[in-house]
Image (tube, rainbow, N blue to C red; front, side, top):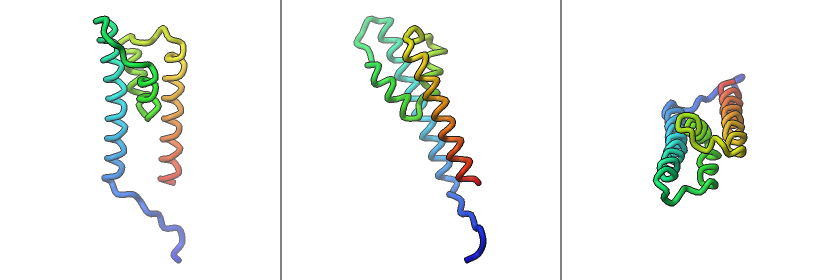
Length: 103
């Protein structure tokens, strides 16, 4: 066997992963926007568990941006605490994964 040969993933997999992150965060932001709109109109609301699920599926950035830009769910302590915490954990997980993959 030859020494330390590295095998890189094809570029389209990186693009697909970035697209998946973009879509997941857009969905999370969209859910926050839809819930804010429904709250103003007095309509049926999106369950908080669904907002948390979207953020937990690597959509925390979209959730945090939705909270800050739309001023939505900012009075709920669990949103103020756990959405940024999920964002930090997801960024750390992605960073560690990239570090070990590119090492």
